[in-house]
Image 1 (cartoon, chains in turn green, cyan):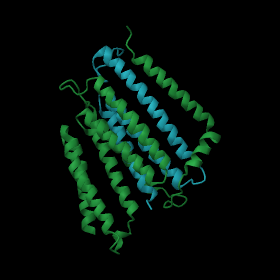
Image 2 (cartoon, rainbow over the protein chains, first blue to last red):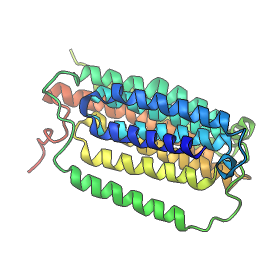
Image 3 (cartoon, chains in turn orange, blue):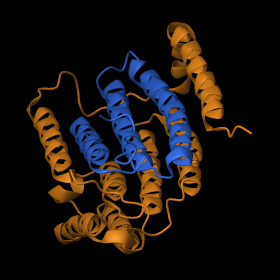
Length: 221
Length: 102
C-alpha cells in the first residue's frame, strides 16, 4: 500500500516537472503521466478497502481529492509555464474543470455545475476565439515570457510560502473535518431574499459588459 | 472527510501560480488566463470556508457565484479590449503597447 502511494506521489511529481520543463510540447507529454497517475489513484482506492493499516485510513474521498487537486495544480503549472498559448488555454480548461470537481466533492454541486457551464463553456471558448483573432499561433510573432520572470517567481513563491505558513499555524475554530452540504434551495433563498440587490447589480454588470464588449470590438465602416 | 487545510493549501498554491503568471507572462491573453486562475483559487477558498466553518450562513457560496459572474464579464470585456489593441498595433504583447509612456 505504501508502495502504491509512493508511486502515486512520484508520478505526480514527474507530471509537475514535465509540465514546467518540457517547453512547447507540454500537453502531449503531460497526458501520459496524468493517465498513469489516474490509474494508480484508482487502484489505490480499490485496494485500500482490503487493508487495515494506517494508510488505508485515508478515505476514498480524500484520495479522489488528491487526484483532482493534483490535476488542478498540473493545469495551473501548464497555464503559467507553457510556451504555446493554445496549450496554455487547454491547461486552463483542465484547471477550471478540476475546480468544478472540487466543488462537487465538498457538496456544493450547484456551484460545480455553474463552474462547468460558465467557465468551461463560455470563458474558455471566448479565450480561444480571441487567440484565433489575434493570430497567436503564428510562429515567431509571439513572445510569451517576459524578461522579469525572476521577480515574478520571487513574488509568487513568497506569497505561496506566506499563505502556506498561515494555513499551518492557524488554530481553526470549529470542526475542520465535517461538511454541511449546501442545498440549492438555501442558495436560491439567499440569492432572492438576502442578496437580491447584489443579484440585480450582477445582472447590470453583465449587461454593461455585453454592450461594452460589442461597442469596443466592432469594426467601424 | 477531506480536512479543511488541504482545500486551503490547494487554493493558496493555485493563487501563487496565478500571481507568477500575471507577473511573468507578456501576452495579454495569458495574463487574463492567470487572473482566471487566481479567481478560481479564491472561489475554492470561499466555498471551503462556507461549507466547513460557517454552516448556518451561506454567504461564501453566494459570493462565489458573484465572483464567477464578475469574472466572466471581466474576461469578455478585457478580450474585446485586447482585440481592439491588436487591430491597431498588430501585437498583443503588453510590453510593446507603450504609446503613452514617457
